[in-house]
Length: 415
Image (cartoon, rainbow, N blue to C red; front, side):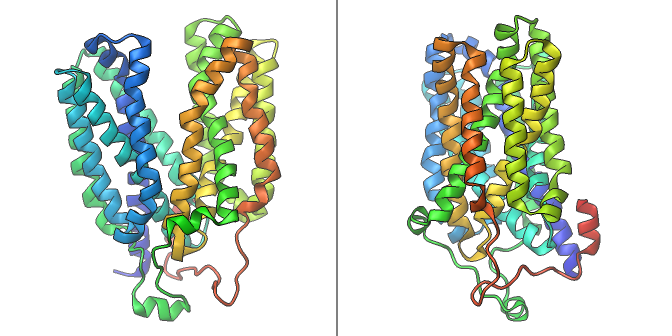
């Protein structure tokens, strides 16, 4: 099979990896209320239990760069899919036993999910480089589509009174058995001698994570990703509640506003890829930071529900490409992509982990609508440091991006 077919199959497998990760996470989230009731937990105890996921992710992210660099991104996606499935099995059985096995399963889930995230972004950067065009944001759109599918399946399981244990065991089987076979067609992290000689490049080698933590550009990209992740996470967690409590609208409208936000973000990730090729990373993300800031402020200070919905659209679209472009920028140097992506993901995850309690604290003191303006402040910071995501210029030790001459139809397909 020609090179084009190889890259095309890798493209599809990478979409599945992103979608599968989103599907698994949303499937768990959809059953949290039933797990809470089954274990007899109050809100405080549930919060402590859910910390197991955060701890697992925090443990995973610092070591994930080493693991991906040592074993390769496609192997780690496969291994983490199996490990995530095992975590779901522990949770599914643990629901019938008590909190301790559920916490253990959630820790395994968090570890697997964090490492999977780094591995699939490294693989996505490999595919993007071989295609010769920007597609990372579409992979993240695939993740968003996966979350929608997982939420819909979860909602159906709840409506049909499917037990939590049966549901999670089924999801475990789908993920652990369905994802690994697809990784066989992913691209290897190290290119063959012939390919390396033909392109003028070298074998990518695992980069040191500690070295990546001392690289100023990587840290700035991490801060940039953190700002966009904070804005994205704030929208995910608080838009629905803000419309209900801040605008005093029915719960159905709050859910609809959240859906509008997600739809705008998914559309931005799917259709916004051409913007980077036409205008470059830095101008696009700066404009999007302004758009997202305007959306947050419209939502926070709008005087009517239609204004809030308009704010949700701008908020979702504006934040859509920040995280994906940060991952692409982290992988600009293929020799050390795994280490740099793991560092950037570690910094970005701090927003997802620390954002909800911070907004909750501010909401308790100032009201939820005023609290979400913290996202606008961080977006302003991201606009100031956006130059960090600019692709390095080709040099004597950094050959220009190679376009595979055999992937024209894959590029057209990606469009």
